[in-house]
Length: 143
Image 1 (cartoon, one colour):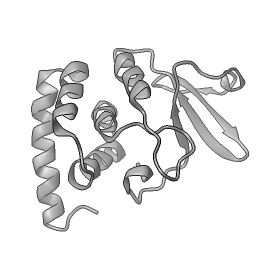
Image 2 (tube, rainbow, N blue to C red):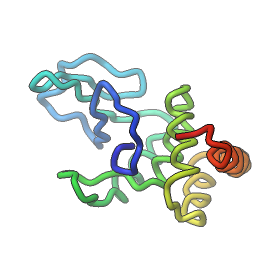
Image 3 (cartoon, rainbow, N blue to C red):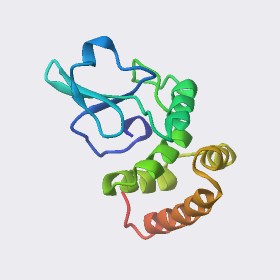
């Protein structure tokens, strides 16, 4: 989120992986799949989805891009929107509103990703959420 201008700070670093690295296999299990370990005092979540969203996460990994200021590829904002829709926790929905109202998105690509990985009803939800997020921002109710 910080790569796209969000000011929300998190308590850990999320890394999407195709396979949890061997050094992290003894870490605590994550509910979504993967492991959590602390490295030099910083918590890292190595996310390895093994559920119905595996294809979404694998595609997000494959399409990740280099972003100035980051040493590793970062998930594109279009995939990040879809992943935030899947997570749907309050903090993820706030992140979703930020992305939809403040980040330049390729809307055709975003709709294609959401349709392919989340289904046609999710595209309608996306459209409605985007309209609401833009309105909230115009009213000064979103950061």
